[in-house]
Image (tube, rainbow, N blue to C red; front, side):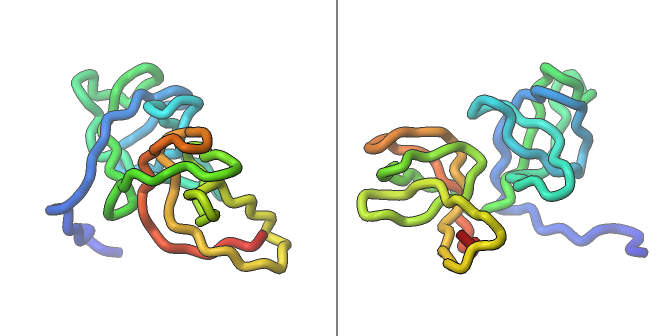
Length: 139
């Protein structure tokens, strides 16, 4: 067992999020809540977008408090929402007019490249933040 975890946090991105359901703790992963600025504890199999690094002024990580979440991606970039729309917390794929949600089934035969996770929800033509990170999903 490591006595002290190794970390390199010089270029980290930390955004404030309000805890929506369930308490969060330092070092624990979170997923989106029902708004662009809400988070909740991530469970096994969830698509987490960040890790709690600051419990804020209240210091508890309880429901309704603001916490600092370090994003798991390296950058958040503005992208144009394409046909199909964009949903926060969903892996995005390239379409002719921008990016849109992937629809991973896990059992599909088509391997689709993902460019990152949407940090906001939007409709065709909107600009939304996407946390970059290349991946593949089965559709």
